[in-house]
Length: 415
Image 1 (cartoon, one colour):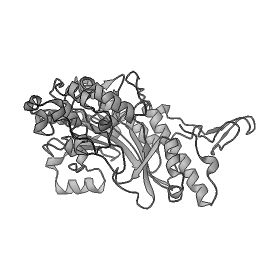
Image 2 (cartoon, one colour; image 1 turned 90 degrees about the horizontal axis):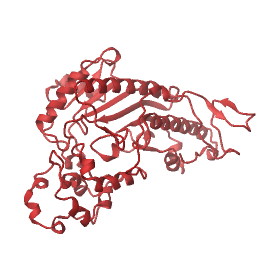
Image 3 (tube, helix red, strand yellow; image 1 turned 120 degrees about the horizontal axis):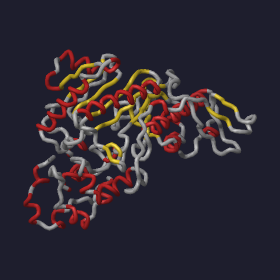
Image 4 (cartoon, helix red, strand yellow; image 1 turned 135 degrees about the vertical axis):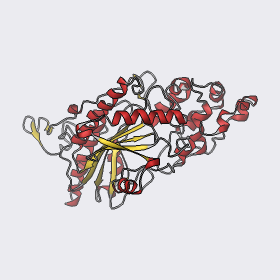
């Protein structure tokens, strides 16, 4: 319930044409899909918790576009939103997720051992087929391609400064952050704290509620780069995610400060595994094991995570459906980032770049946050594999450019 006007029943006294938003200057996925006819069909529908079409689209109406990315322009208020308003969401999802159809089924794979650990296979023509630890360039077998690097435990720390895997999770039976009530939000916090405080071993840790944090605790979390603050992004504010801030929000992390959970930010839970250096294999192992432990605790409490065969894990923003996963590294690429084919390389590897401060920031010192571009239609293992393989290749390209050598034979085929 972001704004009271979205729940104003008197709006139904006006025609759909009179209530239809002005989207003439808009450039987001919602604005591309929403027509006056579709608005008329859906405007009087609502989910069991009371989320309406105007709630769904408000953030996209208030935010016409973004200078760096094509925004989605709509959010879900509960699990049922994706079904009740599927006429809007399905084409938005298809557009945002590279043609993912309403009949497609999502793959889930949280077995960290499936992350490939092998050297690169050089095909026949290199002497009958041998195992190499180098890039395979263009040849009779096709354009140069990565055929499998080690599973992420050997990303060169001279270039890869840190590694991280994060996802979101929604707890079944509660409305999502754009729509949840104060009581729901507090119940989610209580469930989450009970679950997280029961973890043991490498996952043993502590919860820090935002509204009861000491100055010393706050400074320590800022120094560790763990603290999240009240959203300032107009995309989040317009969708209603900052209501009642900081009530029932908080941060939990393990004693080693390598496994974090944010409670009641953009999603019910935001789960993060991270560490310095290039050992993505270890980061992903911790991510998968910790996530499965948390999910099992919630299941036993009668509140499993929202998941469907078609959409995978249900989250607030349609851009995060599927795995909700963003596997990323902070990597230094001063030469490659200036190369005219840098953007093309990223696109072909199905990766995206941003500054290390987030989506709205530029790179500082040629250090980029490189992560998977996909969320839906590929499994967790597949997405992290793309990051590992792609970053490994880009580091090799950087080394070649440092020696003033060409990288033309290293440009990958489209994944």
